[in-house]
Length: 220
Image 1 (cartoon, rainbow, N blue to C red):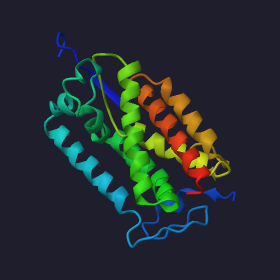
Image 2 (cartoon, one colour; image 1 turned 120 degrees about the vertical axis):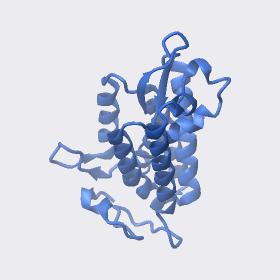
Image 3 (spheres, one colour; image 1 turned 60 degrees about the vertical axis):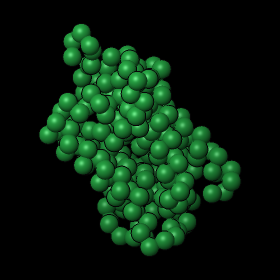
């Protein structure tokens, strides 16, 4: 999740997953585990989320003032409770939405293949809401946060727990590393960048890891 600006009433089996494995827009993507998706359109849920995010992205770039309504501002959230959800689908910067949607495709495709659409949506939506709640509790009262990062971190946390031995390539590291190390490292690095709502990342990651643990115990 990203903080675009401040809002204030006064101031206004172990495998290696490479890039190409997730770049093929086919129905049965070769992910590094043996559970196969059921259904004719396994990535449909991801496409729906991407479409919503793109439409909102276009809308807020045409009318930037919509960020005040859709973004999450802790100081006014109790009178604008929809912000807890709408902020998850709101982006303003191109590279922000690009990074989140690509990571959604990466993590989401894997979670969909392992758990199916219903559990994917549970992790994504509740993980995003958990990120919003963490931001309300720990973030700056008059700083507006937007972005799908909390929900995406939830998917990443779930995947890391479901497949702890999964290894991936994280640019610019040239050698495969465990997914969980990459996710924790990414969280740590982003936490030191100004304007990043690390609180939302933490909330999403925590819920995702918990959900992954729960589903792993139930063997999906």
